[in-house]
Amino acid sequence: MRDRILLATRKGLLDFAKRGNTWVIAGQSFLGQPVSAVLRDPDNAFLYAALNLGHFGVKLHRSKDDGNSWEEIACPSYTGIATDSEEKANLQLIWILERDHQGHLWAGTIPGGLFKSTDNGDTWQLNEFLWHNPARKEWFGGGYDSPGIHSICIDPKRAGYMALAISCGGVWLSEDYGETWRPSTKGMVADYLPPEQADNPNQQDPHRLVQCPGEPDHFWVQHHNGIFYSKDRCATWTRVYAPPSSFGFAVVVHPKNPEQAWFVPGVKDEYRYPVDCRFCVTHTADGGRSFIAQTSGLPQQESFDLVYRHALDIDSSGDRLVMASTTGNMWLSENGGTDWSCVSNYLPPVYAVRFV
Amino acid sequence: MPFIVCTSHLRDVGPLQLEPVAGRTVREALQDAAQRYPRLLNYILDDQGDVRKHIAIFVDGTLQARDSVLEREVGEKDEIYVLQALSGG
Image 1 (cartoon, rainbow over the protein chains, first blue to last red):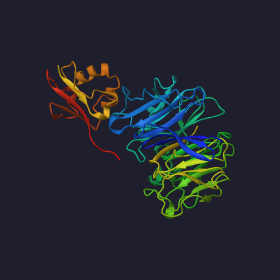
Image 2: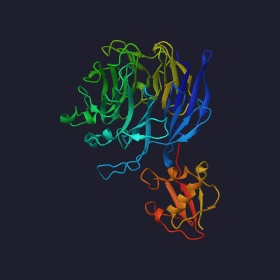
Image 3: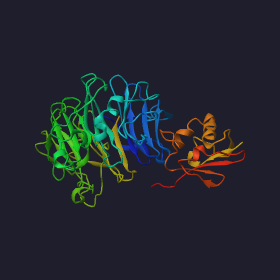
Image 4: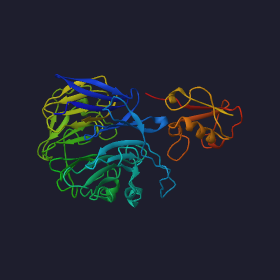
């Protein structure tokens, strides 16, 4: 079990620790500043926090002492990056930070650039293949003005295999450490497109992509138009249905059992509050053939909670889950979501939670 | 020699009191200030070197157009104020 959780919130980075049977805020950084993404490198214990300072732009900070002190480091930058159009690319958001087995850092950004750092964030390089791919012209923003990369999956078993997801730009695969990429969305459907374009791989809107660590051929996607499951490393996708709603943003998969996954549904698609204001997590244990709505410990009336795409996490045991909402509520489960307990009702809007 | 001062929101990255800077334009003045405040430009300018959308720069009490302010010539005693639009939540 992981006894530490980092929360990226609108008002700073919160560091939760388990003390006895209670979870407490053991540390806080960047108080008052929006933190869009956070990462802890398990090898050197470095922490990375991406800030979105609005008027003053996006910043990236690193801590070499596990959060006691921070230094501002280089940000992924579009300075000098050529585009094929009149567009002027500017970094708008660091949406996701991940680390691969070589110790390299990866940053997914809005407006759609993938960046890599081989020196713990001192410098960043744009992935030219993806940026200059003609398909990028078809990408578009989903919720933001520009497209963005929000999910980067590092294959736990096959060196160099990666997958990423873009809103709205589909799912992409690499087998060469990110040097080249190809889309892989067969079976996905986008109801928001003209019918003849509904399967266009470059305009799918996966809200979140996750890969089963123990069975890495298995992926789940919470898509704008529902839930999709792949057993063949994204070659084909099957749509499944989870009452009371298959719309949402967050998804996690069990670390060992790929047929177990959790989602946090909302009313589609512009309303985004719990169905009937009754908050639940939907869980499948059979690869999406059936779902159970988990409600124990969750508000069943007057709930307006929305859980963003990075605000649900599962630890390596597969039993402990945590989630936090845009209305500042945070819940934790010790038994795979069968029962939830409230950790706090007083948080800022939460962008991301992460067991570390 | 012109002077530059920043909003208190930039307290960690720029001067909060009027400081003399070298330069014939706002751009040169900012670049000179950046010698002493290396993080400053990244907070004021975007990736393309343009003034960020919600940054306001005044010269001698007059708000300057964002798309031309960097080339605005500054005189010996001109005061450059770097401010921001107010918003939040």
